[in-house]
Image (cartoon, rainbow, N blue to C red; front, side, top):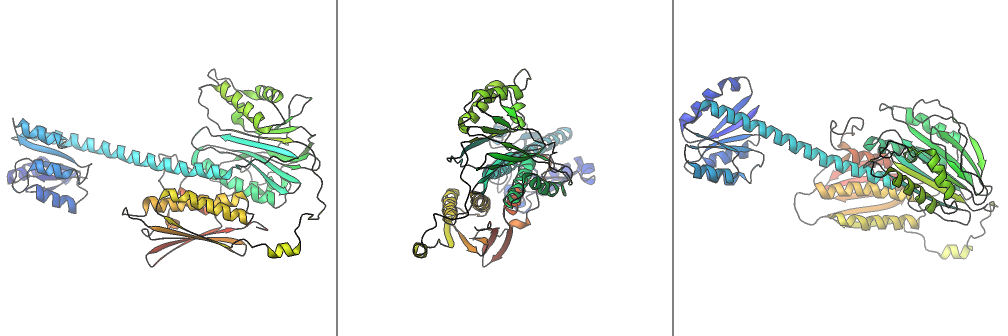
Length: 546
């Protein structure tokens, strides 16, 4: 039901309006409010913000229609006004239009013209509000895509080691704002390196969240010491359970033994990596016929082995490389990839990977791609000595006693300014380095802090004054506990509804993604409000020995 405010000091106008629109009022299509002058109209707008349209005379006591139009600019830019003026009074009509009137009706009022003008105004108003809603939704969607993009970037390793035994480099280029690919490498033991590359079905927010879950499960299972086949077999049923969105992930995971150069690997439906040597054409690793993860919960994943000689390289990639299309709808293909690898420098992973991505980019030209381009290259320099089980570099007992222990607490006070988040992130990173935390743990903490604090700064305060946000981080047993306190408006982040990531972006409700990511990254999240302050507590389990 559209609500129209009629502003006129002549009683005959009210009677005319009621007569013209009586059937539509009875049908519930329209409702009318009446005011005798501009001041009464402003009072009505203040008490009834759901008024859609104003039909106002120009000449009235107390406050005329032109003054009312001037005042409306600060009330509601969406409400539309139509002015009523004597026929031929074009000067006032021109002034009214300059002050924001949408249309005009002349006196004496023609019933048909009045009805048509009201309908035209309401149609325009409906379209305008739809456009504003679409704009607000687009802004919110872009914010959520940025959150998902930050999540994706935080998961991918950013430091690429170059040791006497191996050198590694990786890169991912999303086709859209947020992709579903990920790569990973990590130390399992002093002589074992885990290598993984994966491609989640779909794109966007749903793929980013499924990617985060897949990565976390893989990482946890791998660090538990499972072999590649057993690792995929453990992750698969966890992804398949309650998978209403029927998403899946192709995943290659291998373990490189630095003492022998042997790679033990299992493949869950992913593209076979290449082995690049100095004497032979690059060869695809033998497949293990494993299926993608998340499809059926009882899939079995076989293992195979291959040994790298000093100077050999292994190249992992997603199908965004081989299925990159050019303007003629021709795919880059495995042949071009093998040729690029054969001509590249296998001893320098960064250079080798750069040659591949450059070749793909030049081949595709300006053709828009539908899939992410993700690669990981590792060059094996030579065997590392096997561990003897002795810690030869352990410091003397006296030196260990005298060395200062790392601080167990970190306290930071921020202003309600987004520029304060980066120094906080650096402080958390330094605290993590002092305690030898893995970079993944630091990134998870910083992403959760950035999401919560950015929301507080952006939406928590009604004034432009300076406020303080306190962050206290401490180690309690095998858990890192983070307490965030602020004097912003009361808001329980845990009350945000779980985002519907399965529906199309334009169909689903906005909000909740950032909180869902925080819940995913942290072991536990709790909220309380007391003494005028919000208190959010984050708990994150430390890795064994962390």
